[in-house]
Amino acid sequence: LSPSILSPPTRLPRHAILRAPLATPTCPPRLLPTIAAAMPPSPPAPRLLLLLALLIACAASGVGCSGPRFAQLDRLRELHQRERRPAAEQVDAARGLLARLLPSHSASFEFRVVSTEQCGGKACFIINNHPSFDGEGTPEILILGASGVEISTGLHWYLKNYCAAHISWAKTGGSQLSSVPYPGSLPRVPAGGILIQRPVDWSYYQNAVTSSYSFAWWDWERWEKEIDWMALQGINLPLAFTGQETIWQKVFQRYNISKSDLDNFFGGPAFLSWSRMANMHGWGGPLPQTWLDDQLTLQKKILSRMYAFGMSPVLPAFSGNIPAALKLKFPSAKVTHLGNWFTVDSNPRWCCTYLLDASDPLYVEIGKLFIEEQIREYGRTSHVYNCDTFDENTPPLSDPNYISSLGAATFRAMQSGDDDAIWLMQGWLFTYDPFWEPPQMKALLHSVPVGRMIVLDLYAEVKPVWINSDQFYGVPYIWKVISPFL
Image (cartoon, rainbow, N blue to C red; front, side, top):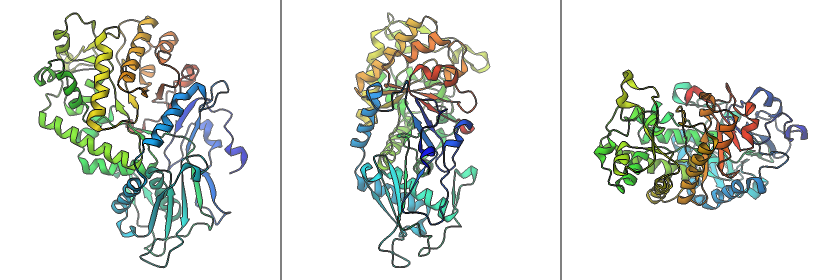
């Protein structure tokens, strides 16, 4: 790449975190001239440095991604690196993926985890011809990576660019691997090897409502395929929402709220996303205890595999949404009855959920317990938590002070349970509801110390919010695509 391509693009939003799929470079039209596609090289100079279709620019008013302004994001990078699973476990995860994807070639590749120093200071993968290759049955290609995700991404890159393979979801072509040569005859790479750095630290994946659009029906076999796909695509910051109702059940039990009290709070599997976001409650339920227990078991498998690859799963946090039973248990609590979202058959039974006021002491207490219970149950955390306040629900007050107090309490609850918490918030509310004028947006975005919140510009390929909000008023954000509303 020429120095001009490696330089920051002049039109890039200066503190945006941008993500596009690794295998198929796509990005906003203005950014296309700044990204070089990773094409199969004709034997080039030693060790090519190619940019994937991921780009980050966090500078705001001349301040870069690192430094005092975003010190907590630097801290998060350090934590993710330090708390990552051992190298041997990440290699095993990548080898397991290869065995599931291309079992005939399990002996054709060798994987190793390397330090970011060997990558030039960034996460990367390095593809070399294996020095011990001696015909079929011995390793032909050596892939080094800063994590199991980087190794898997390197495998995908090699199969696509050197073997003309295509790997996608089952309904969009699936894994087309017939073009991969037989073991012992894989294409060689340039003698100096190929090094490809990750220009951004995190590649985010999923939409909160996908839990009900698709995931509600998945078993471990299907989840295993999806996590493999994530690793191949370079995803290292995925949502992990499965099983949270069982965690909530444990938290609310501390307030003497029974399962029967929660039957009218949790929605059915296909509607959980909207009961989680306080849009409706009870519809499609109740949830059997066996289902709740099975989902928690499934979540533990999901998290274990994500961590094994070196991913950083995003867990849920408390947004103030409470069951009606809590209001009865604490009649003096400050509770707001929200309005009708889109209830079923105009029946008020399913609508108008309850929101605990941020000024009530119970708010931070419950949020803290929820974070702590997840860490206790799962054994660890990645310190990033998704929480969406007023998702397709209009706040009861437009007073910026009220909105700021809600945001501050939401973050305080996260931080009380995890001192290193980062709030990841979907920006859909700013797209959906005209209520969010600049004073209200600023009040919510600035209710949290800068660098402790990351906003998802959720529908940026169609309705980008960063353009009309002075780039989220200085708050770090992710440019995101809703690909078939996943």
